Length: 65
Image (cartoon, rainbow, N blue to C red):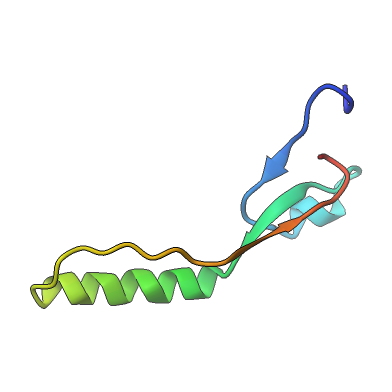
């Protein structure tokens, strides 16, 4: 099956590193994500228009992809 299906997570949880086959994942700065979300909410509460922001991510290739 590993030659037919690739599995990728999107959180880099600790559990993905300790399983029998380590999970390939996308890592993102969760604290930075929360800070940006809070700043955007405050901006909109103050009357600002919604805006978008792309935050950096990193692929961590392990055994499942």
